[in-house]
Structure formats: structure tokens, C-alpha cells
Image 1 (cartoon, rainbow, N blue to C red):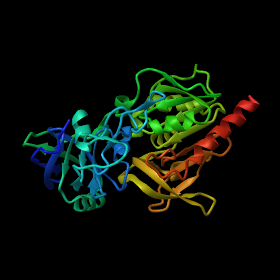
Image 2: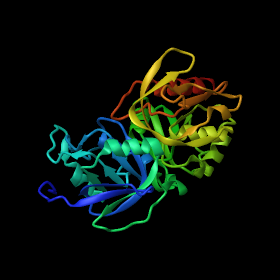
Image 3: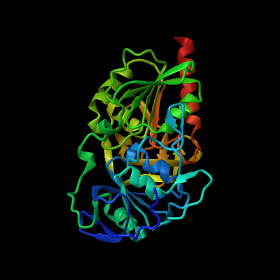
Image 4: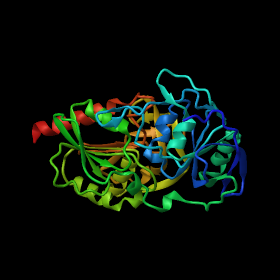
Length: 366
């Protein structure tokens, strides 16, 4: 594929408040609609674009230059793509300030635009992403649509449907042959989560979001990240309530954190514009330690609704929102941020070790 010599055509982003941002089209020649969100990360666009948590969303990259290091190869290791978080681009569209057609990196296999063409994802460059981000911060996350060659589409609100059902696997898959067996509820899991479990002597039993895993033999339960409103996953919540009745260790990340909260009796809410970045500071409750974390979520847990059996363990230092909680007597805990973060930071990867330690303790006494 070679898209570097094409003359760019104009395209526009239209927000639900009728604001328009005109720029140049790149990627797939099509119009799309979705929820417009922004990400403040400086690197990691291949990982972000393939993150299932972005399903149904039009992603705005606030870092001004995108595409400069191309896109890495689609090499697979342990039946997982080595350089991506899933097998396809998950975002509906991409909005950037400046697109670098000439890329340079030792690991680059092709350009960002050619990759987007392959996965039929459109984008716009040449618009003021600073003004767009300011609009989203002031008004909150908004619906929007990329219009290419006046091809109209209706506004689409992805949060009104079960996005998890669109990104989860359809049947059970098993990875590795480790000592400890972990059931992974796939709500849109990132490959980095599976990799972090595999390198800790774990056999990963990956199951669909609505799978009844009660008959599986396992030592620990993991609930993954994923897109959309957690209340859409009622079958997952039902299974989690049953899991809370025993003492097998449980670890939830991002959407998994929200699902655990609802199953425990707490409530969640939609944030104004969410947290999507590689630089969110969180406080480890009860200590003076703060960690820099990667995040991607539009919903959060209301800590004031936690029942007496659960306590917060991390708090966001920017807005004081919930970043995780734990059970006071059972080996259950969760985080809103991503300890497995790829392309980083990895400051909180030790939480995977804590999960394994809880499993070791459980298996040694049962």
C-alpha cells in the first residue's frame, strides 16, 4: 500500500452542538459517527487505537504530531499480537492536528494511514485539536461525526448499546500452561493483561463476558477492561455476585472495577469527559505514595455508595474520583487505572504480583 502521494481531500468533524472543525481526510474514505473523546498520551497510538475500550468512539489525540513512527508489524507471540492490544483497530475514527506521512522507526512496518485503510477507519488532520479538546473539557464528552465528501450519517450514541458484547470473544480460549489457573472474563480485554498473567506462571482461561464459569476449575478470577456503560453487563454482574460468596481471589481492571462495584451493591456514574491518558496521578490510600497511571474510561465508581465490606484503595489526585477498592476480609480488589499499561507507564504492574500472591495463599490453604 502507498498513500503518501495522494492529494488530501477536505473533511469535517461535526459535534452535536453544531460546532464544525474542518480539516483534511486521511485513512478510509468514509463517514462515521460516535462519541468524541480525547487522549493526552504522547506515544502509543497503535496500542490506543486497538484498545477495545474505545469501541464506538472517535478518538482525538491531543499530542500534535501523530504517525511519525509509523505502525509496528503484526507479529504474533503465544497467539497474541505482540504490538497491539487486540486484533483490529477499535476506534470509529481518529482526529489529529498534524499527520506525519513520512515515518521512521526500527520497528515500523507501514504507515498509520495505510493501517487505517486496511481496517477501514477514517481520520481527519489539520484541525485545531487544542480548541476541540477545550470544547470537550468545558461541555463534556459529546457525540460527533466525521463527514467525508458530504456523505451524511446520523449521530450515534454507543453507550446505548452493549458494546462489551461486540468486543468479547464468542467461545472459551486457553493460553499458556502455568501452575495457577485464572479465569479471565473478557469484556474487551487488552492483550497486555493476558501477557502479564502468562509471565507469572498462569494458565489463562479466557471466557466470554456472559459465560457461566462456575463449573470451571480455577484458582483466581480476573475481570477485564472494556467499553461502554457497565450496567449493560447484567449477566456478568450476576455471575460476580455468586463469585463473591467464596474466597477465590478476584482482580478487576477498569470496566472490571466498575462491574465489581455494581455486583457489591455500589453505583457508577458517567464522568464529564472521562480519563484517557498516560499521566494520571493516583494516591495509594493510607500511604503517602502516588503513582502515575494510564487510564481509559468514561464511567467511574461512586465511593460514597460502597457498602461497609468494601474500602477505597486508590484515589485520583486530580479530581478525587475513585481509582479502585478492596474487600476488607476477602482477597478481592480492583483498580480503575491500567497496571498493564502499554505503552506505559508500568509503575503499578506490581498489582499483578499481589494478585498472584493472593492466589498462592488461597491454593496453599484449600
